[in-house]
Length: 129
Image (cartoon, rainbow, N blue to C red; front, side):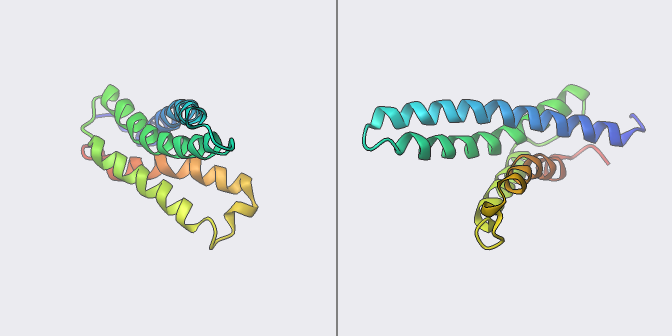
């Protein structure tokens, strides 16, 4: 068992960020394609692209943390990591208007990209102290 837990958590966090960025791009592309297939006024591709990005962030953060920790040989729970990242994305989007985060987009994006891997780390761990 390694003694440097800060390095382990940092690597798992980086894995979560890479996973969420990868699936976010994929979600934007798929959502935009589905929106273009629907036709309409042209706002369907924007709305579905944003929805795809949020779903990609939520699923990618949990998957990235899970795969990174599994690669390091630790016992982690995929569904608990996903619950943590989904709760983070859902909480941020629910509190964006009351906290007026949508007026400061830099802080909103920092929270949306930084908080899901952190909650996936905290809820997904089983064998790491």
